Image 1 (cartoon, rainbow, N blue to C red):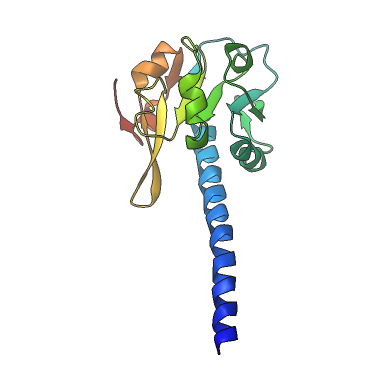
Image 2: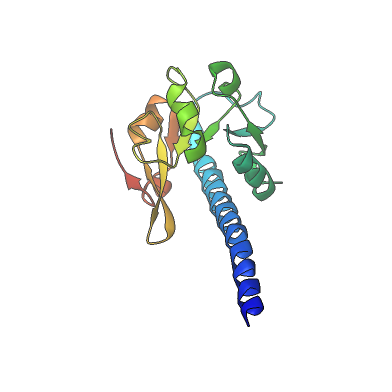
Length: 174
């Protein structure tokens, strides 16, 4: 009887981390889908005639792995999406159209001394992210992923997001 109970306990403890990892991967996959749609329904002022791909960046390797799988064979403005890991330097970020800062990489974002990032949509998932220089922030509400967006900050970065997308999120202006 005790052996069965211990075996059941061990199996339960073994399953908890795997369910947690799966939940994080599912959440990252959904966020990658949001980023794809943000990109589809936005316009960057920089001429994209010379670009051969649409670049989604993050310093978080785990997120990039999930985004690469989810967004494989997807296109934005007839350009294939390429997901890459970046360091938070202006030189490295110059290749990005969308930058996603996860909660795990927030401290890197906060310590990076970046000036205005023109033509880069900056998206995060932590409290006060927009006040810290981001344009869009994911948050959970009733177990669902929602977003808030600052159209003013997007405009300052030379990005215009469709009003159809803006209506789906919570608009903030900081």
